[in-house]
Amino acid sequence: MSSRLLSLKLVSSMVDRKLDDTEIGAILEAFSESREARAHVTNQSTTFKILLAFCNIYVLGFLVIYILLKNNLLQPLDANLITEDFLTVFDGRANIMFWLLVLINMGAYFNIGFKIMCLISIIYILNATADNFCSCQTDGA
Image: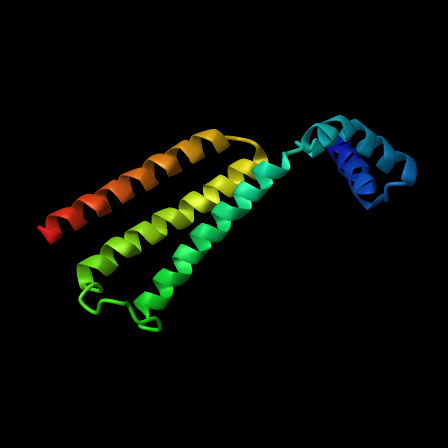
């Protein structure tokens, strides 16, 4: 029983004791290698940065147009164009584009999965464009 009391006092004295600069330096030095590995920045080309910025502006513009159309702050050229079905499809595409933009930016920042997210985005955009083109062709006929 006395050994347990002694160990509790020892732990209590260690908790109350403050760390000095030498101990803090030793702790920081122990983790310095992992910090350097994580702090390694990948240099990207200027073309890549411009294309990524353009994609961000494109998607954000798409989302702004969607919000303006949804809230009737922007008048469409054809009043018959804005139907409930159109807004439902536009809402889904706006949500998908927003989350793809978030994932692309995260992939570019963390350098994980960027190529896959770009491939998914290209396939989605091509599919949405083909779907929109085919539905316009059948509506006009």
